[in-house]
Amino acid sequence: MRVITLEEHFTSREISEANAKYNPPAPNQPKELIEFYKSRMMFGEALFDIEKMRLPFMDKCRITMQVLSYTSPVSDKVPSSEAIKICRRANDILAERIAEYPDRFAGFATIPMADPEAAANELERCVKNYNFCGVLVAGQFQGHFYDEPQFFPIFKKAEELDVPVYFHPAVIAKEIQDHYFTSPSWNIIVAGEFASAGFGWHMDVGIHVVRMILSGIFDKLPNLKIISGHWGEMIPAFLERMDYMFPHKITGLKRSISEYYKTNIYLTPSGILSSMQLEYLVKLMGAEHILYSVDYPYMQPDNVYEFLANSNLTQDEKELIAHKNAERILHIHE
Ligand code: CA
Image 1: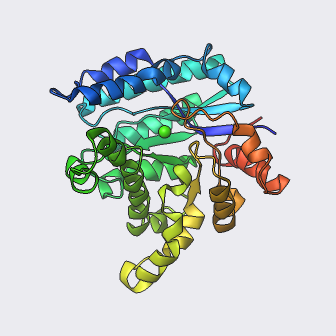
Image 2: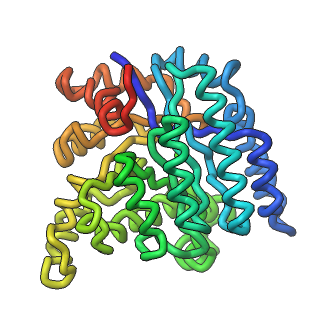
């Protein structure tokens, strides 16, 4: 069984340095926080390296192909002219690495959200010139969610090119971090994890996908495909409730929230290898809407292949999730 995983991160030193110029470390951070972040840096080398770490991991886990994306696409602090240049260069570098191992890697583009027209053009360039499979966007742009009309050209282009947009989490607004996730009852590291990869980032990007539905974008672009990681970022369990609370008469949309969700949204596990989630979401969404992802190098489970192969799904369902959906939606050919 071929295995294609979709949320697999990569970066190059040149691009991290170009981005770092606009993201200086915050001054006066508490010592325990600096130490904690340093311990996380062990992933650093695995993001850059292909030969010594990434390919051996893939071979060990029987992963045929990773679809690579930059961990944090260009920071929203980078001015737009510079962002356009950095994204072009980032995509050029990624395309060069993929070209060395075309049967092991594919790519999602990084695009400059600061300039939506330029972003749509860069997506087109990457799909047409480099055969990239789509685009990964992270978080919001300077506090603006992508349901706002200025970002429409990006999604219109994605639909026209028939490639998906992967909605990836990113840092959330400081006032939301403070309001929900900080308390005198727990320490600063717990607060940071609660506001980020432990919960807050996921809540945020789950809401982002619901915002796209409520904006009516899928009535305008009925063939647009959005991919949501981490088993849908908590949203699937809430679809019945949203259908009840957002009836047609208040949304003005053509269909119910769950109809759009089951039509236009595709889910991946992002390394949360939970059999209960897998079985529930195959029932809810259909196996055609589930793709596979590990979130390498942040997650490195050693049962990537066995998790699917030994699951209670039918062989057809396993094949769809392991590779056939990716081949169909991302236009990856054997
Ligand atoms: Ca990720």
